[in-house]
Length: 605
Image (cartoon, rainbow, N blue to C red):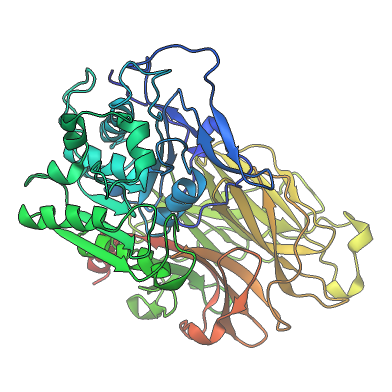
């Protein structure tokens, strides 16, 4: 039943830590990848159809009656091709899948620490649709591991770092997979179904009376299960030296699934000299997900530490900052940071690239991204009055291609300027969008005021796949005011535009945000200001451990500032927590790997 997924459309996947929220009253079917061409061990019943579980407000909280098992990918995009992945098994007593609290929310947590996740929608044991309901969930779990392992290269996953996490009855499935991974429950290729690690959260482990969760037991093996069947699916009795290293979480006051389930499994792991870590909390009850009260709120922090100690989280990136100094005559400068807060200069703050194109041969506002081709692509402002921008690319940030002048506004004779270009790569279309601010004399007269010295910017854009052929320049954003310095980031399945309101009367000079489902728009109405009463420009943003940080030039104060948010709505000023080199002007932040940074240091010695 081998199933290999090819050419997966990554536009359907959520990338980077803090994915855009999938609401609890909807679930997109298009993101799901079927596990089977033909579901094994199945029987047909026309009346047995998948249905949602709803709360009292009509919001979806789970899924019942699964007939077509799937995995829903949440892939991280951190420049690494050796990422860890986790198969998530939601709980629900083998009668429902708590797909949101113990599925999607958990995937977001893993993404926030740089781990790709796959939420498993597994079949719930049923005599109605299965010839043997005991093995149905295990078939799906084995095939989920095998599917991810077969496609590891395409999904930038290390095939030897694929684990499983399970909650409650999903914990029983995860522990079953961890102890029965070699059981031949369907015909498959030789791809291993063994998890490389196991995470069990308030898990059902045993089928023994007095310890088990009776509902899960009855649903899986029936009311009158044989002694052999009870023994087989009491997974603490199936542990051997090859059982994966395991992390446990349980609450002492769990009255649904006794804590002895975890304790007995842990003791058997210890007996077989298998690495394990267990956290038993004083309170929390059962089904607390990522936590709701008491000490159990901190379990994900402990898990993060365990994953890090076992080399399962990616090494932290280096944060690079490209910027200019003075008027931009000497060209490109770099600073770097290991935490995104303290930045230091590279090469004694001397230029990495001298500008050669444009009327004034400047290199202001340098924006750099890493593209789908593995190259670093840079655009910049070449002049105060030119109708085009500069472009170059590099493999290593030191050696650059021949500089190119792109005449993006040459067709508009009344164009006054082409300022602060930025570039964003759209993985779904494999295109780059270059966008910038221009004033076209006479355009948008309703917002033309003398206080703005004749400037009345709007955002324009062009797209390209190869930086040789470009689409016709189009208007990207007209927010109804003088706008400049837009910077667009991907946030889950949305695009977020950080922008400057340039209006001088009544004075604005602040940063705002707008959103779109497509890179090329349309974008929403601009938000209220997200910066303070100081004047701000040149926003550039990055997500660091679940928080968006927006850096900007406090240009009247001659220093850099920053704000931070975990939801893109509520912002705090953290300017006093950041340090930038003296004289830094309008730049762009981007991430590189530790390996790339070491190579860069070697090149500039």
